[in-house]
Amino acid sequence: MALKDGKRVLVFIAGVIAVYALVKLLAMTGFLNPYWLRILDQALIMTIGALGLSVIFGISGQFSIGHAAFFGIGAYSAGLVTKSLGGDPFTFLLALATGAFMAGLVAFLIGLPVLRLTSDYLGIATLGFGIIVKVGFDNANKVIPEMGGATGMTGIPQVANFEWIFIFCILSIVLARNLVQSGHGRACTALREDEVAANVVGINIFRYKMLAFVFGCTLAGLAGALYAHRYPFLHPSSFDFLPSIDFLIIVVLGGMGSLTGTIVTAIGWVFLLEGLRTVLGSTFVDYRGVIYALLLIIVILVRRQGIFGNKEYGFLAPVVRRKEGRNATIES
Image 1: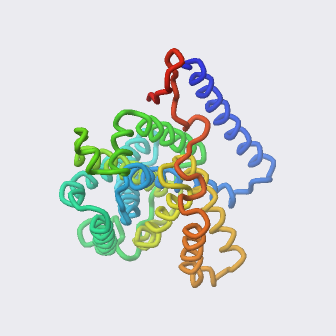
Image 2: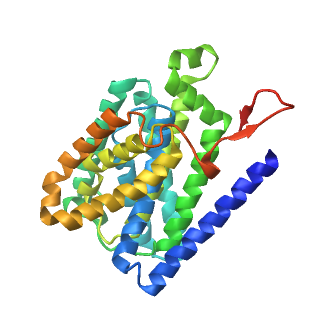
């Protein structure tokens, strides 16, 4: 079975190379113009952030609706690094690491009190935290003038091209897959299914909640750091309540507990919104909330478990090892 898993990895690598080559070919021939390549970059960045929430909410069952706050923390932290030190490759990588680290650190500090809450109370706490962060961004120029406050932050070197974003998206997929399929990931899944039962069998509830929360928010910070270096303007409104709902809808639509669903839905969601924006024009903003509500209602009525449910496919599917004809066991 190890050989089969090895073949799966090789197929994944071949698929990654093929997708990259296809995108570059389409861009070179003009079928994928700079505008839609920019949207593709946005979709990949959204995928990284959504994978983080998928681990937090979909895998470990922690209801968080302040995910965009960590996205913003990563964006502003990384932007400050390159705005101060320049946009060479080393500084850019340092900025990405800083953005991811700061988001993870804040998640750890916030998680110490709020992860002791359950269900709806945790959601309310993360929502409140998101509002606090947004207000902080609005007034940040009083402490750090470079952040711009309510007028937004400019002057960040735009060094995150498709290649960088694609590489870190693939890296995020691999990291999320390895975590979910490890013993730690299965412990997180046990929390989602039944916290009481997980506690009875000796799983440290708080420890694994913290693991999932910090990991997911670190990915959000990485996504934010890439966003800051792909788009020329950071504004606090980009990290308020609505972007958090974007992440939440992606995870719910894709399927709770399905990384495959999160990836497919994140990319589809960005292109869907852009298509609607193209069709509806300036009225898109007025109908955005209605579109969100209708999609959620349809999913709840038609397929409550999401498009993919909790299923994984290809490289993301769990490795099943059979031992001498006995029942299969799942290994990381």
